[in-house]
Length: 382
Length: 240
Image (tube, rainbow over all chains, first blue to last red; front, top):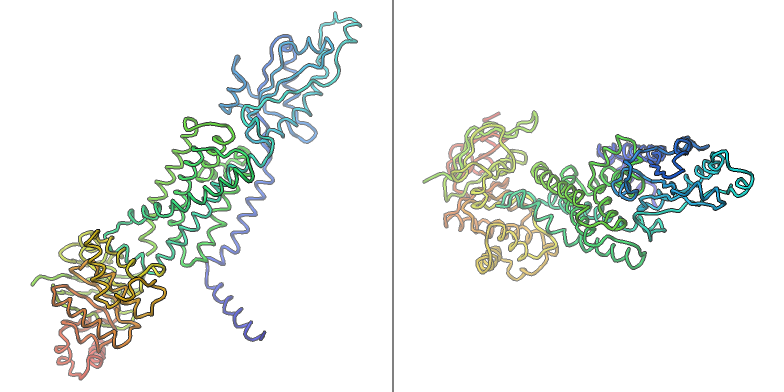
């Protein structure tokens, strides 16, 4: 190795890099942006779980105490956010409608059971799709509820005599966990597996279409195409149709792998439709973004700007409800957010097209807007 | 005889840089017009304006009696760009067929037109070869075949002979002349003044302005030069 030659090559690279203003900006901005997002996400405090209490019978006497004890922050500063639901509302309906994160049902005979020496039972209803969220809520209840309820018999009427007092149970009540969805889901991998295919489809289709259109431009064929009767809409439409099979094959392989190698739910046809729409949106985005790149290197530079924030903010890792308001607003501007939501609805909550169509409609909107932006960007890029 | 292309006071600027400064041209139908000038004189910009790929800053443009870039113009025009502009991982015939399809050809007509265009550029024996396996000259020929597969009324050839060996250049110009006789209007840009003498009319461009226009014979006579190269230099000096 000759030092002079090595220095010549290194010097040439440095000169090129310094002249590539966008690369320089991204070298500085990209890690700052990503680390900033990580910092915000890691520091963002979990939103207190919204809990409703359904009490009937004699236990109603202790509702206020129970509510206070649940709302009060524990030693880690964590408490519950108390939500009122209409009388007679079915806990499962309230959870399905996302009015609450948990419903604590105190059975009608709770006090009598404890007074008669039985351990007694509390029913905790959770949505259950996210095993981590479920575990977190359950753990908080287990910490808060026994303390608050162990004293319930002491509130019994004063006519409880010594014999009665001896029979009073002083152990913590049993908390029975009831999940609306995800009854079979215990492994957190089951929560992540269904969203892997859309993520891979989005990432690779974005890169594939961006690079391919860039090649069209740099090679001069784009100029030739636009000098033919082909319209910009035809060109973008052709790209969408041309890459769709590749996107589907790729998503299909990931689904098969996830289904048979990792195991767990995948969402069926609703998931496939969501992945198709997401892939189309990714293609349009790839073509649009490539208009702002002059080289393949510059297309790669868009990954930390376009792809990584979507992964962090779309709900794959951090629940969107836990994001600060301004990040949540950004999250709702990203197609991956709606695909992940739709696919989890289908795979984990077992919902069909009738329930997930709003997300699919929004994804279709991304495709239409993306195609329009891509078509508009084509001329700029030639 | 009607004019295929009319430019009136055509101006184009990129920011503060003026690329074309008030160009007036009339290019008659069925004629071969040579746009001659050094690199950066505005030849490619004229082609791009004619095809609607970029807008003129001001001035009037008419192509085949229509505004530039409209579908009617694009259907009737063949454009060979300065870059090869080919899909290198496709074969010669696949490239030509693709561009034929874009111009509305299909079935037997597409098949025949593809074969004819490939024959015209003398690449029949390499029709099945991938473009990336061809020499530079063969690629230029493939590019030309893509531009003419639909038998356009107007053919814009941007530096078609750059990087082409002398023998092939002669073949190209013979082909252009044959198309001119068939009634196709050709606008050919070049900075090779020796080959430009094959054109019916020449427009000498310098820094976005037309410094002289006429038949090769007229230009030689008017400048008093013995070659077109010297004629160009003489006109350029007069303008300074």
